[in-house]
Length: 287
Image (tube, rainbow, N blue to C red; front, side):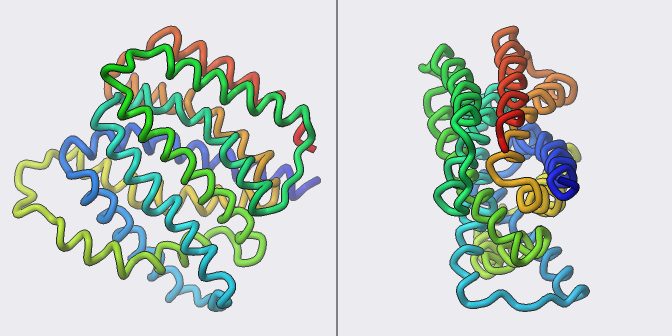
């Protein structure tokens, strides 16, 4: 019971850190090309991860761990950052944040497929209800201006759920910070050359907020947040702790409204309130 409670605490800290990811990405894509931004943030985080593994020597992953680590990297180092960066060229961060309500269901499904989780039926009821509320909200929006952004965000949620579940499963064996560190290092030989190739001719004129946003998504979103998140998933259960992501829209909308002065509509706020009730119900029946 103690490990489960600790897992929820670690998971909540991870979600709090991740809540700033989409607003920060929104700021960063205003100054950097989305593909370059994805490669650069992965390179920065990968360099820090490599330094951690050198300073705190760890047992090397076994051969059987390499593919799962590559899948983790595909989901959370490449797929989610790139797809959200592309999406945020078409939609606001406030709109994109609502899609995070789909992430717990995606994580839970992959938790069953990849980690053998078996949540009870009532858990699925609340999880699907929360996802349905988010999907319904998206469908009621003006598709002529946000359809591409919505599709990109949906794809981002799918690959991120895979990366979360795979990382949570692997963290039981390797440890939370070790999993994200090895995943970043494995992708570093690809992301570093890509960042160098795509770098702009000059960085002059890039405002300080964009640099701060780059630092946040590189250090906190890509590395530190996962230290807490993967440990939480490993200790508290992938499907169960994954429901904490339903709280992320609340935190993200507050940041979008206060830092970016983006409009948060009443429907957005009501959807967020509803999904919080869903996470409470899912937690109640998570087992």
